[in-house]
Length: 113
Length: 114
Image (tube, rainbow over all chains, first blue to last red; front, side, top):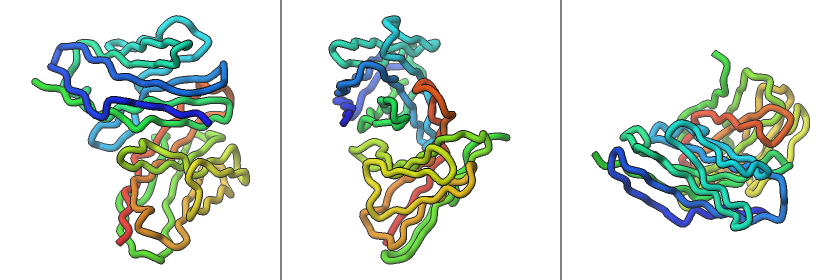
């Protein structure tokens, strides 16, 4: 079974600075998708970014980018120019052929002004 | 507006009671999912459905029942609630097709069992 590990329960960043959230996963599959979801205090689950395992190029969405290392099974999220609105719980998730998502335990991101 | 709606948003009940959480989506997505969110565990899949009348167990199905008679609805029932089922429950849906189709989540139901 696939597993997803987020080793940082909590992270802090100064406003306008850059922060990286870590995620590792375990799988024997070769084709899959990886996602980062953001959950603000409102409890919504908001898709931040996704990466296909077959694509070598790292995905980027505005201030959010990933560092995808397939051989190392690592999928970190970098947030540049951090804003107060980025404060949230961030979940890394893995998705395979079964269309099901496997989530990590989450990382709470605090943004200091 | 199209979307995915969960009800109720909050629910308090007692052990042994039956409770049903509702989920409705207007996109006509084929796939629907139920997750529970607990501290330290992230979201864990309870049940999912690939189409009407097709359901399958996820990681933590014990104590839950689902049905899907219509594509747009996917209710989750706790037949005899226990305190360990106190959690936040999320419903999600996605299009049929490739793994790149993102799951769209409802706003969650916070369920407390006393």
